Image (cartoon, rainbow, N blue to C red):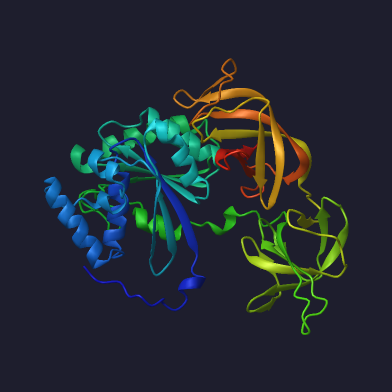
Length: 427
C-alpha cells in the first residue's frame, strides 16, 4: 500500500468538494463500501492498513475487513454495526470528498439525519439477496426530506447472487415504483460488490451486461454546481468588522458566508429586519477585494451607506425577499431522549440569528416505517419526525427548505442544558 504524501498538492484547496452520505439496512455493507472506496483510490495510510489487517486476523476474518476503517467505536467493532456517524475525508485528482457513514438501525435515525443534513449526494445500499426493504424506503424518504439533490442506489453483494442482471433490474423496478412518491429528480443505479470491488472504483469483469458508470466515476463527475440557489441573494451577517486603526479609521465591514445568490460591487441590497436599502461598496477577503462573490463563499461586505447592522441581520437582494415571520411551520427530527413539550420554550438558532420560541402545536407525526402521517399521535420523542408549528420572540428571515437548505433549516436548543434537541426543516 502506498504511503500518502503529507504535502498539499497544487490546486488542492481550489478543488470542488462533494459531501455524500451512505445509508441502508444493517449489514448492507455501508462501511465496507467506504473502506473499498478508500482502499482502491489509495487513500489509506500504511499504518491504518496494518491496523485493520491485524484486527481482521484477530476476529478470524478470511479477508481484510475494510469496514473497520470507519467503525471506530468498540461497540461497533464488537457488534459489527455502525452506531455513530463516522466522517472520512479523501481526494482524487478531480474532487475532494467528505463521507458520512451513517447507521442503518431505526433507533439511530437522528444520526442519519445529522450525517445527511449537509450532503450533496446520498448512496443508499440495497442487499441484492433481499431487494428493496422497509429501511430502504425509510432512508430514501429521509434523503428526500433533507432535499439531497442526488441519490445513487447501489445494489450490493451482487457476488452472492451470481452477478445476475435480472435481479438488479428487478430491484431497480421495485425502487422506481416507490420513487414516484418522492421529490427526488436524480436517481442512479449501480450494481456493485463492495467486498471484491466490482463497479466501485474499477469496472467489473463479472457484470459485462452493465454499461453504466462505476460509483467512483459518478462521485467524481456528477454535477453539483447547479444545486446551490444562485438566484436569491442571502447573506446572514456573522460579525461586524471595525478595526478603528490608523490605516482603516472608518472601515465597517459585515463578515459572513453567502447562503445564496451572487453579490457584486454596485448591487443594491436590502437589510433585514430594518428594510433599509444600500449598495455594495466592496467585497473584501484576506487575499484582497473580489469583483463578485457567490454561495457558499465567506467574504466581508462594505456598503455605501452607514446603516445599523449587527450579527443576526441579513443582507438580501431587493427582489425575491425571504419570508419574515414569527409563526413558522417546520418538519422536525427530534434528537433528544426527553420528549418535545408542546408549550415548551426552546432556543432557536437559524443562520446567525438566535431567538427564543414556544412550540405551539404538533400537526402530525411521520410513521417512517409506512411513510404515512399520524395526526392522532402528538407525542414527539427521540428519532421521531413530525410537522410542528413554533412562534418566535423575534421574526426570522427564511426561505422554505426546498428553496434554500441554509436559510430553510434551524435547530432547537434546550436553554437549561444547552443541548441541541431538534433539527428542523422549514416548510
